[in-house]
Image (cartoon, rainbow, N blue to C red):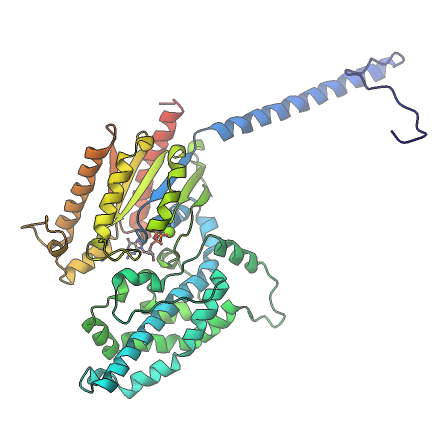
Length: 457
Ligand SMILES: Nc1nc2c(ncn2[C@@H]2O[C@H](COP(=O)(O)OP(=O)(O)OP(=O)(O)O)[C@@H](O)[C@H]2O)c(=O)[nH]1
Ligand SMILES: [Mg+2]
């Protein structure tokens, strides 16, 4: 109590009724009290509803699968499907990612050609007809892109460029064309988007500068990629860049245009390695169904070192979508080149199926990258050479996909702790239309699961 002030009596509740109020004042007091009570009741009701809303069963999806299996791509499909306006308003932040993916591919080709140029010096007979003065000039003109790769990588990841190149191409090392970074890059880009523009109107950021250099190089990149010598040399070395994540070399003129705005397909194809688990809450736009208003999706990193972080979500999800890329049959893991990707996927699937904590979780499996499987088989790669149990069957997409589906389904049957329905789909996650149909089916499965959890059905 402040010195010198008289102490007031402790307040009592409810306050004693005034003894000297007029009839009019009494009526007003009663009206005020009724209004206050109504307001309190309304607030209580809203708080209760909010409490109930928080407790309600929500769609919680966990995406699992090895690195590059397509988990983050499926997440983007969910965002595109359920929150198209939010997806559209964020497309710009993918522009520098597409640029970095493209620049890494170009630099990969430049490094590859450099090894061929030096082989030519050492042994005049090799590939001489392909290496024309025009090709050398093209390579010289594209040299500034090495600097662009460094500055974009630093701007996006906060660390210096690390673009590994192995002169002997190894499909497992495709992360050389990816951007290993965490969740933070998106929020930092969203933050930058609101920065006030330069008074001259030009974008002076690293992204703006990289964009201008790329715009000047677009035609040359296109010439490099379509150069018959480059195509022949890559083919002779068994390199199929088209199947690598973040491939934009066939779109270089469009994506380097100064006014380029990424299309949804570009966003799906852009590659960013997920590092650490990410929680994404998708607020469904225009959803009439109260149970489908909010989707919580957990996206995790798929490489071996990331998998320990998966288990923390096991007791909190309604549905697991497992991604198994069918195209991995002739590839090895980037993190362990002694392990075949398909073998790793099967082992991982078996482990997930047999997990007791997940016994009541609904399982969906996407046998993904159907398009790459198709192009590999069409190119003559023999599935049976890598999967020796596949005997006397045609080397065609349909029977191979069916065979893989049977293997995954029977592993699920054998190893699930209790009988459980599996929802399998053959998918190409970069095909938005086809994936939209699949997502609608998954949506139905999830809604039934949520309703059964809330005892509605
Ligand atoms: N051609 C083709 N590419 C696909 C398909 N699904 C995903 N991709 C591409 O494969 C690359 C890897 O996909 P992501 O979704 O980043 O893989 P991820 O499982 O999230 O990988 P991590 O984050 O490393 O665990 C991306 O460039 C995708 O665009 C598909 O069905 N076909
Ligand atoms: Mg990912």
